[in-house]
Length: 271
Image 1 (cartoon, rainbow, N blue to C red):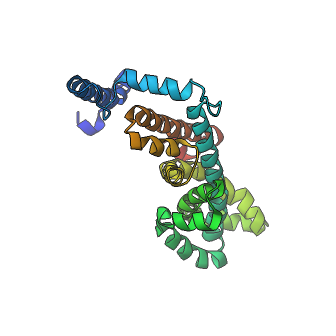
Image 2: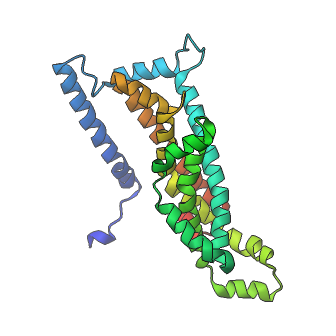
Image 3: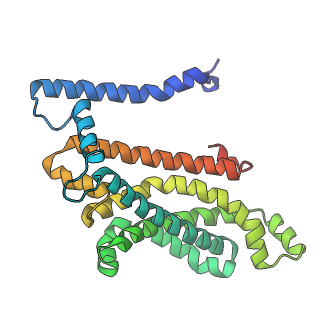
């Protein structure tokens, strides 16, 4: 049997999924044990016990000055900013994608504009955002919005252009107006693609959030990572990075399940 036609069974698939993570953990803790044996004060590769102690200190020990738990405060702040940014970007991207992909009069100016905007590095305009919107929450949210909206809009525009013209013509023949056409034909086709596109830009959204928090913030996961880096506190940085990765994975899983639940007929819902 050719290799391309061989598929793992359920147990084999689970083993193959866990294997690379197990190898990474084994390599890390082996290197950590070796470095700590040579130098017990080494901070580059902390042991599991050191990271557990750091998590306990950050997440389960009340800050005497503020009376809060730093880990959960950072998580709440970051997720709030991320949720606002992604939500606004989804709505704006959907509207722009429909306008550029369905309405020729709007598509002519919007399509090249979205192409150009998607090429602008969002981090390069971060100082401009701080100048225009200040150092508060708005600038951080706007960086996420500006960073992912053009990408979402271009993806949805392309999906709108792929809707068969026969379908649009039949709807118009039955008397559908432009708004009815958009709401009853185009929108149901684009909503599942929007959820999939959001999954694809989650990594970029997190990147923009961490960058904004690192430069100008008083809380947040990115703020904490860059705050403790000056002390080489890898026992704090690594758990925070793992926590961000877990949150991103859970968000991706949630969007995937939502796509399957709401749009089981959509082919992309299977991925």
